[in-house]
Length: 327
Ligand SMILES: Nc1ncnc2c1ncn2[C@@H]1O[C@H](COP(=O)(O)OP(=O)(O)OP(=O)(O)O)[C@@H](O)[C@H]1O
Ligand SMILES: N[C@@H](CCO)C(=O)O
Image (cartoon, rainbow, N blue to C red; front, side, top):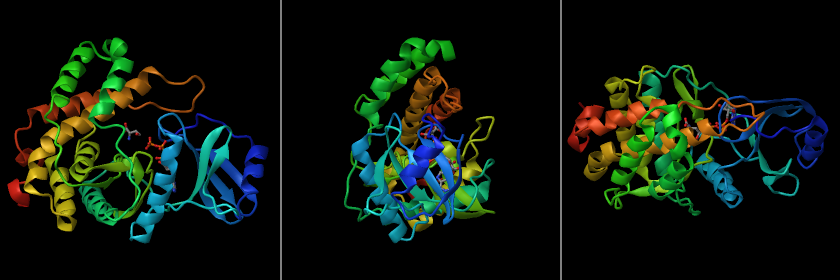
């Protein structure tokens, strides 16, 4: 998160009158993240997170996110729970933005993920996929293939300012991925779609919970696996760490086995996952709102990841033997 929208103390105190959360003791904006505005609240009843939903979040998607957190929590996934006001509603408005309070989750996200963290996230992702199986509400993935072209169009004329040749590179990749090869028949379900290290909390090496469901949607489960491969299994110098990938994929596979078709599609899905984050980062990099407390993320990190996946010929390159056998 970040802080795009400020909230005055008296405005917040008034807002909290709609809840049974006791007295507001203190609050502060959280500078981490890039999508929404988040505040950490301390009240006489404990700590809570207040989120004001910004730019990429459509208001009519919010009931999906809030109901999903409740559903996953009821099915054994440790994630924040929406806090309802006295009127029974969790979703309301503050400072002209849709807003909700969620419970505070203990733990820290790993600044330098290690192999144990990667295994933890693999297991948690698979458990989340199983837990989401009977979730009744559906939300299409607005940032799948058909959502990439508008992002490209919004950023392409300035892309070469970020790296010479980037516009042509992205254009070619987009033509390739949207030219009819994107898989259409892999198992689908509820995916997190943004399970980066800053959205997974640990106490030591033990995973304590997952947060930030603002991109959750229905899509291919293996696409979520590909997003995590990109987010967790590369080093700060952008080299691929096959030991981490193997730990992540093995831990995932012990809970939910990937089918042969899902395994075979991983290189392609990882390319798609790379261009999706490359494009949103590029748009954000070129459009930082004036006065916002936010540190945009580096789009070029994903150029390097995308180039790696372009060179991959088989799932063996990810440390996975065909048919789920571990390399
Ligand atoms: N339920 C929670 N419990 C504890 N801390 C939280 C919780 N929700 C958010 N945070 C803190 O706020 C930060 C930003 O939250 P979050 O990831 O939801 O924001 P975002 O803008 O959607 O970020 P992102 O860029 O990952 O999409 C987290 O990294 C964490 O430090
Ligand atoms: N996790 C995203 C930002 C939030 O969507 C990224 O690292 O680009």
